Image 1: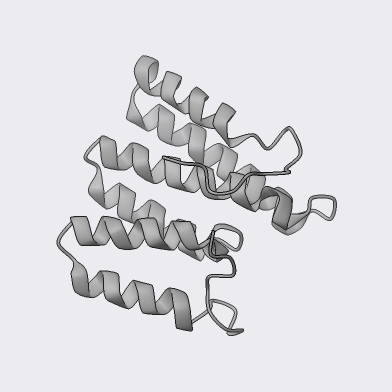
Image 2: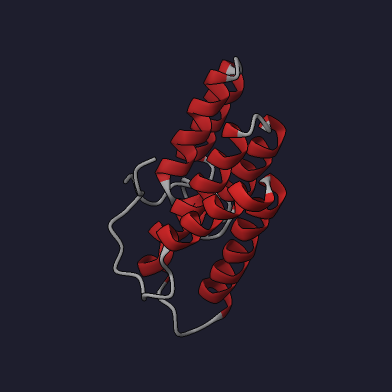
Length: 143
């Protein structure tokens, strides 16, 4: 998985360190524990961006998107396809991750791989036409 954006995020928002920790946790403690690593980081980072006034959303957006994609990938690799779908849904509804086109495209590809082309088409149109905030398309960046 390639990172979403080259980030100018503050050092405490390093998605690769969380991904490494989750992979180590997967090996030592299993999928559930690795999922918890992602959930905790995402909850904290998204809260920092949406609730705090000191973090610039744009500087952390790519790192948050990387976590969402790695979290979904963990579930895919573990053949937990329902969990992967839930993660993708959470990601596209996230006030930060939902603006990142790569998340939407990865979700569309996942649906196509799972034999759901109509659902994938609807999702693609939703990304381009119907934003969560009623202010244009959901996807705000195309990287």
